[in-house]
Image (cartoon, rainbow, N blue to C red; front, side):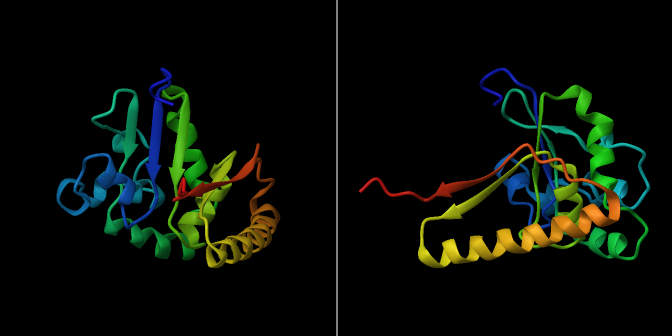
Length: 172
């Protein structure tokens, strides 16, 4: 997307911080807890501008993550923030970007629920294998049930599309 001239923001919501590492940061060494989504999700920041960092790729910016972000699971579960907290944060800075990509944790915890409500489209990566297929089908079923609960609590989830992206494909 950035190579096509778009300004892209990647919001790393995963405390494992794989996306942060891929974009050139050592999560535990380079990123303080205050440089992640954590202060915003805990209510200590009014927008996400403080957390946006440049990457080595032209046109790609990052809201980084590290293990400290996991603390937000407890904060959000305790009810100190709503399921629309992340969406409001992204809305506060979206004017500066053409595309915002959210990388959620690989679980359906409170951070992931916020990411689901913030997203307007979804791409689910899946390796080509029988167990991966069954796991993805189960995940999509659980996702549908979860979206119903989110919609009952905060309102309609506006997804333009949900796609499965096949990964690790062999040409042979």
